[in-house]
Each structure stands twice: as structure tokens, then as C-alpha cells.
Image (cartoon, rainbow, N blue to C red; front, side):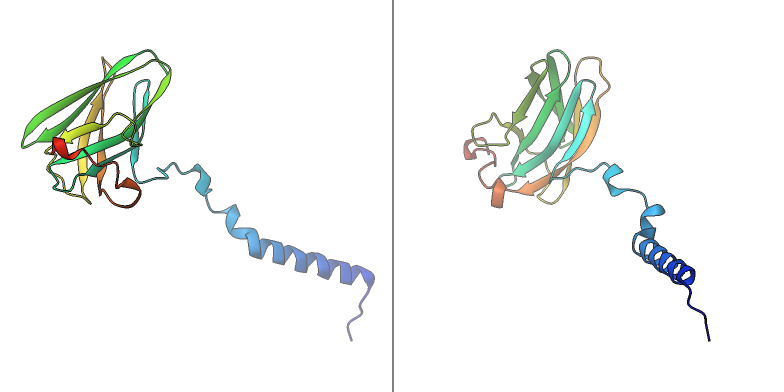
Length: 165
């Protein structure tokens, strides 16, 4: 027969509690925290060019696929800049320039009332990735592979105007 002293009962309780706690939370001791992984929490992609943070960049395709509306938000932590947006059309570079005010946040095409940046004949269908190069002044530019989406659901009113297609 096993003697059950108060000390033996306390030791057994501590061992059981320790096993329960380690068994239910032990994996967090060896797994990296997911909150430390940087990701884009929306349909678009993000990047950075010098003082400019490019956030949630995506393209919405028009009905006939001959134009896309470029949606993006630019957060500028420096002075005013002329942002150059360059993409390829049938082997030739096409450039669009937008002035970004200093120390500001500027959005393009994210709502019906905002200014749109329309890219003609991008040659990438919905579901594809459109390579776009962003650069200003002497800052080192960056190329983003921008997702092209159909103008459906929440994006149905953000397609390029029919007059431009």
C-alpha cells in the first residue's frame, strides 16, 4: 500500500499542473510569433521608395481588359516628390508621373471620388501580376508585381472609365 502524505499529494498536484500547462502551451516556447511576420493584409502589395511608402497597390481591370485603374495609397514622410510609375506596353516603357505633396498621405482610385491613375494596354489579364516600377528623383526605385483584379464586388465601381478604354 502506498502512503499518501500531504507532501506526496502536493507534489503530485504540482507535477500534474506542470504537465497540463506545458502540454497546452509548450509549442509557444519553440514556435516563432506570427505577429512578427510582415504581410499585406489586403488584396494589394506594398513597397517603399525613399521617403514614400506605397501601400495596398493593385490594379482593377476594365471590362474589355484594355485598361486598368491603379489603386494605391502613398504615405510621404519627406518633402514633395514627383513619383514616376513605369510599366511595359508591347515591349516599350510607358511612364505616368504623379506629384506627391510633402508630409502627406495621398490615395489614388481607392474611392469613386479620388483621382484615378489609368494604365492603358497593360497586357496582363485579371488574375495576373503586372510589373510596375516606382521611382522619384535620385531615390532607388522598386519594382512591384501588382495583382490585377476584375471589377467585381467591392471593386465594381473602381474600374477605369469606359471613355478611356
